[in-house]
Image 1: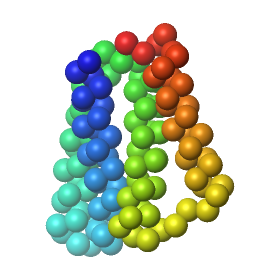
Image 2 (image 1 turned 180 degrees about the vertical axis):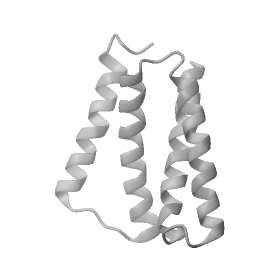
Image 3 (image 1 turned 180 degrees about the horizontal axis):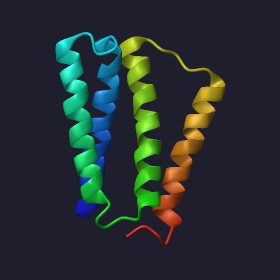
Image 4 (image 1 turned 90 degrees about the vertical axis):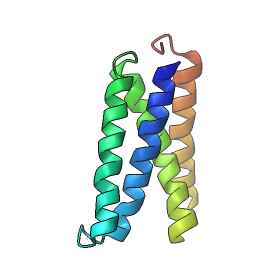
Amino acid sequence: MIQWVFLSVAIVAEVVGTSFLKSSEGFTRFAPSLVVVVSYMVAFYFLALTLKTLPVGVAYAVWAGAGVALIALVGYVFYGQALDLAAITGISLIVAGVVVINVFSGSVG
């Protein structure tokens, strides 16, 4: 069960880092750039811990799917970046894939 906590921390840290990429303005602003670097360090550390017990394919599928959905939400809420129907449909399919993996796959430990 702890692997899911580690993966959740990794996902949140990655989303925080990605969210601050925009405000780092190409790494020309120090504080947002520092948040990006530290967030990615935390994200990859906790992803590495996750991979001790979860298969890499499953962990990465959950990481990517949750990250895509969350960063789209962050873009909408904080940056006013609206999504069209095709984008919403695609993100929904990604999330559905993550759910299928977690509910029905025998690979999930």
